[in-house]
Image 1 (cartoon, rainbow, N blue to C red):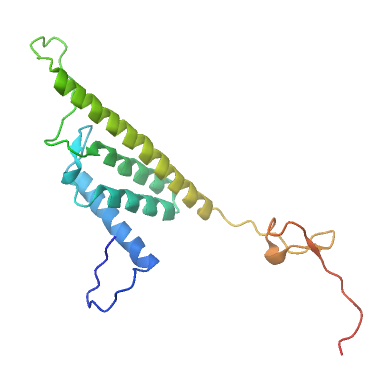
Image 2 (image 1 turned 90 degrees about the vertical axis):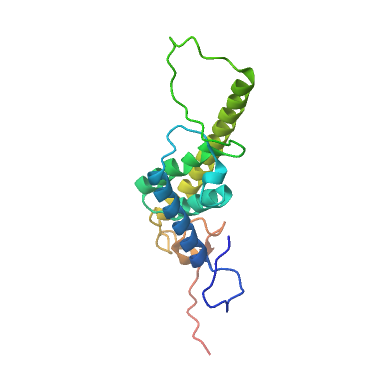
Length: 183
């Protein structure tokens, strides 16, 4: 991901905050793009997207992983999954609409049918991939959003757990207080 700096004084890699900001900008732009030109159930050439498909997928993944609200994460997952309908080498937009079964004059073209079957398979593979990818990102966000479970550092049996975190050390440390004065 390339981030331009207005004064060209920075040549270092972008900060995490800049990458996250760029991801939010990409996701926001794509959401507006989907509102302006909804894909429906159509299959569309990926060249129609305003950004590279891989960059958009990464942006959605990052935004989902950092979103604390479950409902918003779910909406982002649905919207991000629309990217599966954008495939390479599609050409003109393919509208997927039901046909009238009574229309017997439709000419069966085996080449077109096999091409459509391949496209449908690519869309299905992409949907499964995106569902899994965004699901993992959502689980990361859900784990981060859960309140931390801190416990008192001293247990009833006199053991001590550093920083009050359970399972931090395999064996609790037992503290003994000496009555010997310091020199």
